[in-house]
Amino acid sequence: MAKMRKKGDLPSKPCATCGRPFTWRRKWARDWESVRHCSDRCRAEAKARRGQGA
Image 1 (spheres, rainbow, N blue to C red):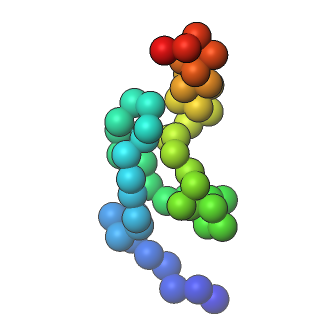
Image 2: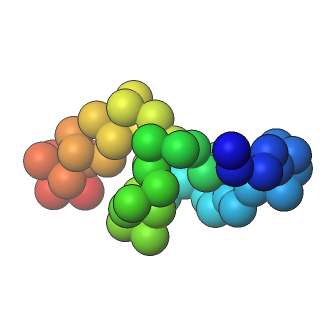
Image 3: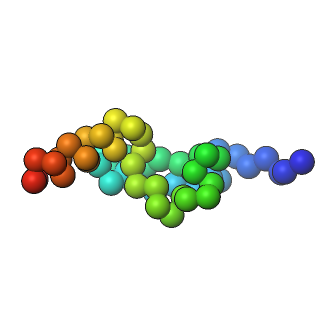
């Protein structure tokens, strides 16, 4: 079984939309480098901003 890590030891990065830091999740393990937004809400907001030409 894999060794458990403390939540504070996980990598984190800032969200491209809101700027808040978010930490690594297991479901993002394969594409952590390409994850840019902390949530579906931020992703949708960024998409809406692009559609308006802002």
